[in-house]
Image (cartoon, rainbow, N blue to C red; front, side):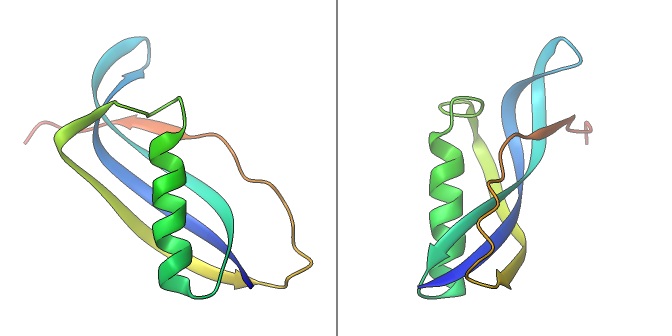
Length: 91
């Protein structure tokens, strides 16, 4: 297995930002062990969608974008958690 850190941007979720439930996005990083970068990216997205902070809060037009997938040395075992939420701008 290879060791990846995956940086993901999510858009169009129904989240609390600044005390208000609104259409929002987020940034999050997760460490994933996988055979390929593509597999690591898919696994990170699936794991994020299962986390309580965003689970079942997707709007019909949500998107998950892998911004960076970086292979780390196998001994890098840092745990990444949490989200940075931001309000989506009205178009």
